[in-house]
Length: 190
Image 1 (spheres, one colour):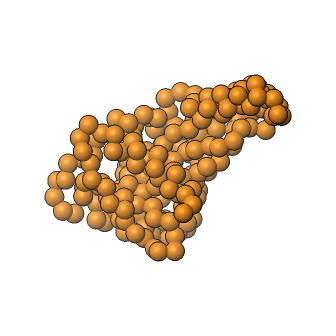
Image 2 (cartoon, helix red, strand yellow):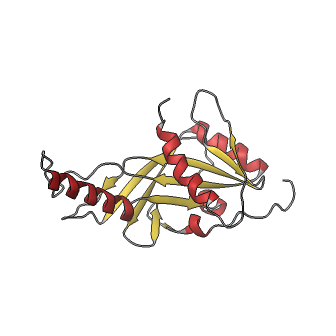
Image 3 (cartoon, rainbow, N blue to C red):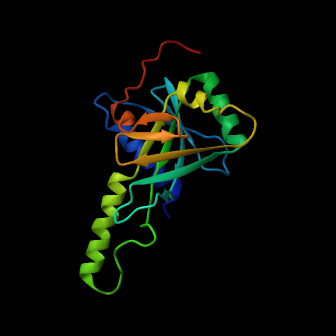
């Protein structure tokens, strides 16, 4: 069985969640059989809604890119799912910002030379390490982005080589938020 893209990108999120000192329980929430599933219940306390982007747009650069921007589109059915889920528990949104491939005009030419191939692999790993991550939005943040409308909504997430994601040119989200996040204790039914 082939590995689907959403399985790879959701795996990045799930690996970080289960590497917590405190054990966590996860349950996938099925939204529709014909679409990929996008939500997980964590410890029966909160829900995490996942979107991913495998291609970002590099900023102008010379040598190694300085920043990359991803675009995430929330269709009305996604927004309806988030709204419905938020009636049952707090919803966090995980935007998996991945990138495969190198920017056009990269300073490496690929040929049959083993040294060039090794150089390409090291370069691609460096870009992936410095310019990928999971932008983890808490409920207040995604509400401020107006992800509650009836119409499709697009947001942009930029990552420059620092400690923050910049969402829609105004919201700064710590890059390490998910690594430091603790699942809130269940405080009663909503």
